[in-house]
Image (cartoon, rainbow, N blue to C red):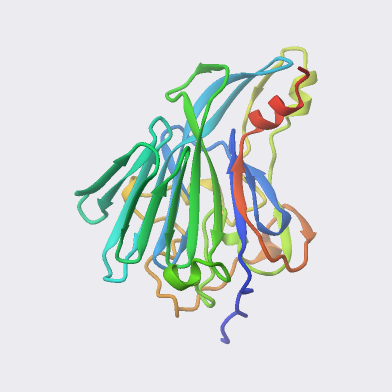
Length: 298
């Protein structure tokens, strides 16, 4: 069969914020609760894999509303260097900084705690500024920003991560860190949406508005990105924890020149919107907490 059409050259971006609300490329969105203490793959591409750990947490929102939900509290980025060696860059939202490990045996290679720290080797770079840690390698950039969990009721962490993800195609960093593969489409809960088809797909969202108006003022989140992802969320669990790149749809061991078909959008049940070509797509995660705090009366 002929290879799939190349993905567009302009950078795409995605993000995750708060009680994990995912803003997908091309206009899609979804919520993801996850399971306590489990790492989920967000993007998997040749030589680049990024996953985050969900922690079940209860917290209060103004109005008021008690939420039994979750946050991303740890992050793991695996990057293959020019030498073929794989580095694991690990972060914990409770701390400012990151650690670099040899992915094969877990040997600590570097520890950088505090602001304005940087590590760079073998075509892989990690840097922490104020509250944000950046990693660039193999045509991708991911950053995580630590934020306090306001009005915490119960949970293992008092800090959480927001995340942004983009390709480096067409950016000032392309010369140093390369382009994303044009023939092996990425996967992962977010990565699969970087398919360049101009169609945004939204998955299940937790209904905060209904909970605000309910008599008990309590919400237990349940959404697992159903409708926006191939398969189900359990298939995106990292089988070996933060030092593993293995899950059902992994692309990590592929070469940039390999052909990996994009997801089949026709099989997704989520709402679809035609967004057309977009030059600066960024995927992200945000917290519903942030939206609620912004909307709350002073």
